[in-house]
Image (cartoon, rainbow, N blue to C red):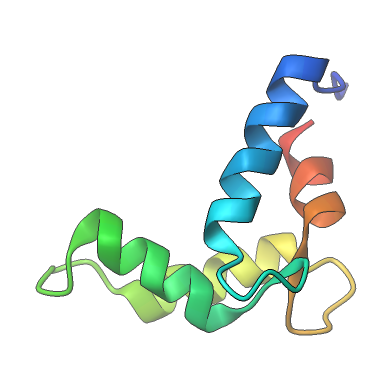
Length: 78
């Protein structure tokens, strides 16, 4: 059973999305997500950032167009 996000959660998720969407085109691409993960984890990490990006896109890019939209991200957060 999915529980819809409340207004505050939706607003916080939107802020997060806008921060990642560096070119402000309304979509997150692989490079933008990679830059976020490098910022969080650092470039010199034992974690495989490329694999994390691909895993995230496999789960979030519901229409398989190579981008994650806010609606796709929100649908997974519910």
